[in-house]
Image 1: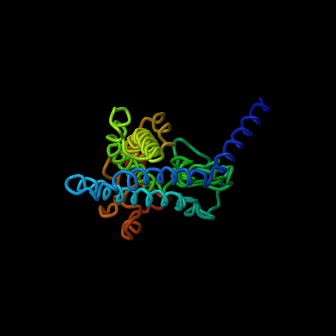
Image 2: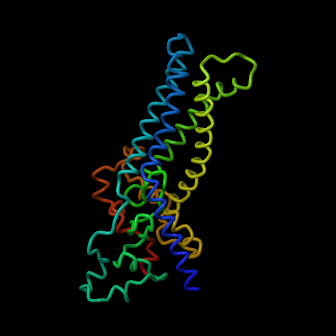
Image 3: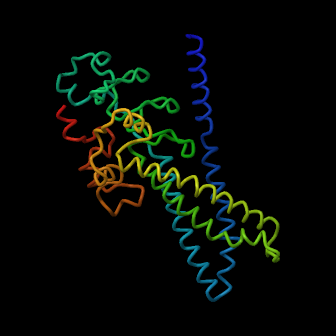
Length: 301
């Protein structure tokens, strides 16, 4: 049994090390897909169509404007997820109630995870207390505030401070890939017709590859986006989804409107950009990842 446990721990360690090793490779892969798509849409098909005049030029201009706008928002959201720390437990952090007691209690004994009171927990790997909704990431090797998951595509954990940016990345990726799929579909269908297709073998291959890649990403991202919309509606993370099923009632479900605001903020001007207003950051402590309001009936327990 001990040998089996050791082997499992070693396998998990190797898996986490492999995920860390992906690093910039995944970023380069994302940029590579963007580059192939840009070449197919802008340089090969719709850029040259601007000089044709008439309706074709107007349609090409519309597609190019939408393409560049969505691409800009996609890349802005993507690098916001990549470069934003998901949230780390502050040094010497203690729960408010522990500070009120003067910090005399032993965290190893008093702050173990308790299903009846999940606000008091202790991470044995980091050897420190951790806030509610905080989980340890084996890939990053630290506790992450309101951790959702570790995403290899963004080479980062998705947590309290960058979850909104991740959702916007999914949202704009879905819109962009759907636009590209629809824009290149006539060219893709032309491959299977008897008509002569203009272009070199290289440009035709790029158009074909770009259509297939964007169709695949649109379908897969749509599934992830629907899943995360349901998680936001219930104020749940991917990790917490299982806990929510087993507990029956969820203490953080405050209604769809307040659940949405805990991720996107209250200022509507900032809902679709990767950022928050200073007023929201000041009046909503849950955006910092350390404190979360819960249902009154849970607070009274």
